[in-house]
Length: 54
Image (tube, rainbow, N blue to C red; front, side):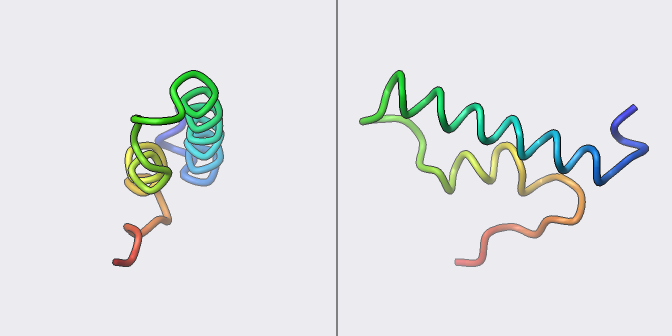
């Protein structure tokens, strides 16, 4: 289970973020969430990450 391997989970979440960003901006580049919003949704909550500094 990925929860038992926090580094693997962080890499996996980063991959999902990359795929989501690519798909979103290819399919709907004008009114989707910002890259910052996607980062917060996919990566920032995971292990070894802090939220984006304002």
